[in-house]
Amino acid sequence: MINLVSQSLQWLGMITLQRLTLLGRAGLMLPKALLVWPSSQAFERLLQQLYIVGVQSMLIMLVSSLFIGAVLGLQGYTVLVDFGSEEAVGQLVALTLVRELSPVVAALLFVGRAGSALTAEIGLMKVTEQLASLEMFGVDPLHRIIAPRFLAGLIALPLLTTIFSIMGIYGGHIIAIEWLGVYSGSYWGNMQQSVSFDADIMQGVVKSLVFAVVVTWIALYQGYAAHPTAKGISVATTRTVVLASLVVLGLDFLMTALMFGR
Amino acid sequence: MNKPWLEISVGTFIVAGIAALLMLAVQVGGYHLNRSTDTYRLTALFDNTAGLAVRAQVTLSGVTIGKVVAIRIDKNQLMARVDMDIKAEIDYLSLDSTASILTSGLLGEKYIGITVGAEEASLKHGDQIADTQSALVLEDLIGRMLVNMTQ
Image (tube, rainbow over all chains, first blue to last red; front, side, top):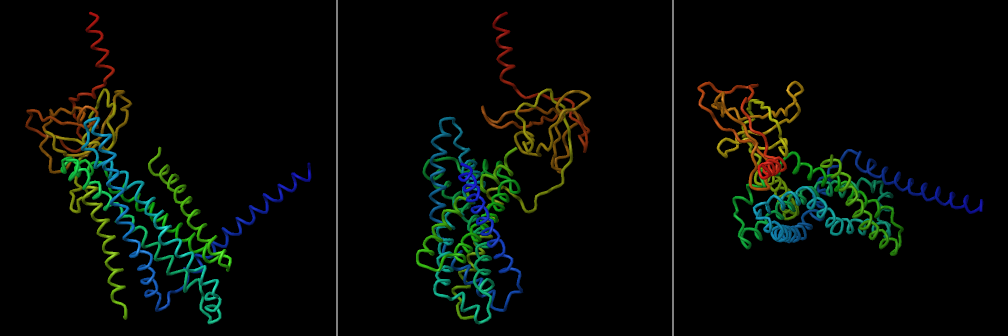
């Protein structure tokens, strides 16, 4: 009996220590990568990564935002028309998107589109010993590989989120006004009255900044710490998607409670 | 640089992102770049402000002329004191103006409607609107109707 208790305590302690070590390593990775004076080619590398992480994610963001806005408009209209207040559909679409859906859905899509690719890329670099050979040349792989990707994620996701919001609102506009016949003046007017720049739009931007840091960090660390085997990469990629999605949803609730709760 | 298309596409992406933020601010948030921040403060005491919220509109003949900035209890008179910021260019509200708490639509938001009186002199910063009309509370209304019916 006592043996069992001590064994389970030992197991618990081991797990905790392991997790803390992981967290510590992941925490050390970022400052090591970023707190270096940028080299002359750093900007070019950042540009390259911005293209991969940002520009290539545009299409999925545009398409999904249009559809999400359209669905919000349609569903909002069917409920609101019962109360004779279908002009409020603009307000509903805009507030839902700007406060919650844009940051969260854009971050989730970003995890799937860019985060998993980052993990797999860095993991494969590790398997093929490219990271080790960089070190042999005297180049810090953290500085060379991790830093531009992290900065690119940090810049790209907030921009993608704002594009997501505006396209979603236009998606709702297409459905509500062109199809269902809501008066366009009240669609935009109600929206402008109820959406405040500081309280709603900026807080959405703050959320997307936090998500950008967390998502890119998780993706890069999972790749960097992956077991250098084929299976190790697949585990790391899965972990990136699962962990980053869960953290985004959890942090979103926390931030919503802090920003909008009372 | 050997890859102009890459730079062009990244540049377009950044411009699109910033343009989206500007559009959100102006078209969705109703943010005016040259909005006149000059306002003056008026207060009014109400018996009941039920449902009125901070940031609610203050209107004159249906046109928005300001917003509510604070609602609290006035300790001396035990009434609700509502502070409003009115745009500086609306400097012609007469001293005997009336402020009433109104509802937009049947279930809509509460706002303050100001009706101008006949007096020549106009309200200035820090003045108090003396004549007020409280929010319509449904329970009071039903109660009054029941009393009328039983008489």
